[in-house]
Image 1: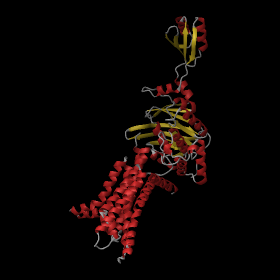
Image 2: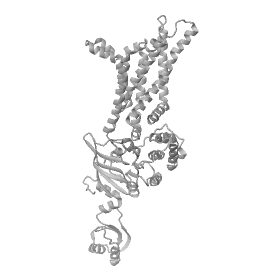
Image 3: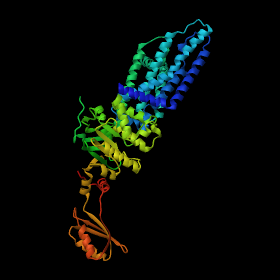
Length: 252
Length: 325
């Protein structure tokens, strides 16, 4: 456990020492804030639901996909390029500790990036009080909305760690993560056009959008949670195997 | 499981029939050797001979395709973490975190290698002193020179006090003064360890290594002390002389001496250069002097040619090389 914590702390050091991380965080905060403001402005006159305003827009999730892609870019590619990976892999640490530390590092940066989002409903609540609006903030859907954001982030970062462990370059990693994660958001569109009922059900189960819609309305379905946790475990396991393969097949 | 105790003359590196393949390419082919405590062994070979691959297997970075490798008593495949704890590995291209300060980096590496608390802090301070890094302890690694990078890498290699050291071309990119400083550092810190040392600087290998392994095309083609390898490889004792006077008479006299194998001459005006090769271990220096005096030649220079490891290396790694085990 201590070794994992040491590696995790170093991972955070690498992330937060780079000015690119702060630029990324600033751009993400600005873009999500802009999306929230625009959607809130356009929703005047419709029933007030901050969870839908925050987690409903497709642009918000596009920002999340871009964020996880950029986080994944730095995970293994930089270590491979500089040779640090060899230094780490020859230390008395397991491949699992390395993969989990990378994942924990990615999740921490993701968490820091998403932290300002908590302020938006609080801001709305403050505005509601000052303007004397009677309707209260529905906190339950907001809580499940943040839960789905956390779970989606965990899944997308898991895919990011896998792509980063398998692919060599940062650009190929970004593209692979972006494509894979975007597919998970649009795959339910394919379900609408397919003739096969089972295929449609499967595609709907894999797709993130229906589950996000449910969670942001306060409906907690455990099936996608189990699926996503299993997928995260699969991604991390595959990343660990990819590291083993990287050792065994690397030519010098 | 208890830690194995290191004893004098104990085999700390044991490589038994190691083979490593990348697909169809065999990088290391059925290699066996061992290194005892207190022994510095040089690993020589042309580029692509498999030296770095062997070192990467020993460090635990690459898994062997076949064969058994144990470091400080631990098998690198079945007990990888224990084996790695017993090894200090300095790779050919030292990779460090540029954003970290020297002190913080060494502390991080020490903790990663299992040192904690006061012991960790003491070892970091000891390494800063040993590797002469105190003046730059608070500076970022990214701004340091190549020489300091090597020292930080070496401090990292030694920080957990490993019984085995694997050093892959540690002098690469250093100037002669830095090399000399680094050599002193090795000699100080390698006394009770088993050290496998790879370098293209054959003079340095000859000076510091007790034993030499010469590799070519993934196989070990020679194992011995540098002195014995040179001795074994040498065809005979070679003398060179610069003379003037009746050179043809001197040449004739030399040819008639017992134990002289060949004599060649490069005539010049007025000085001619003679190359005389005697049979193995035959000492004919005094007789050559006598003949020069007897034939009335003036001798300007006379020396016994000293052979070096680089000649053995060149011969062993040539395309049609012989096998000397």
